[in-house]
Length: 219
Image (cartoon, rainbow, N blue to C red):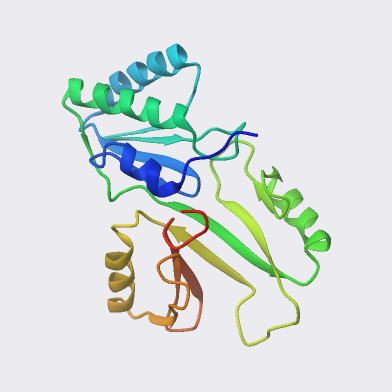
């Protein structure tokens, strides 16, 4: 089994102008300014990926290109990801394209369940998803929709929502994101697991977790 590097080690080994560790992935957003320059960047990334025999997810939008690196066979980040991240950073520099390191984020939907095996098949079917890398999650086979994962409950908890959103952001963006949410009418439910995550809620009690890679084992 491949020994995965610590998240902190990965973050410190890549170009901080571009890359952030999120949910066992490396993510970068590049500001291209035009669709044509985005196509050029994607083409160069494709050439580098083929040369390395390691292929990221690439999302081309007008004015931006989003890149996600992970080693699916290892279940997380490896030296292949950090090496290709370095090559992609060099390509961006060569093309004069800047990164937007505060932009990457990952959304997940969490569902509380007393009997995960009883409810998971329903959500897999209704969403058209498939089983994910973890036993208690389902994922979009196209890699577009958010992961849905199931949180084990030991007893009914009618006082709280059964479904909430997890938003994972760069570690150096989390405080500002939380402050913005509080200023927009939210309130802090719990920071007991800070810096791994903080639980916030809107004015009607709908909850969201703002998460980072920090404060988790292993880092």
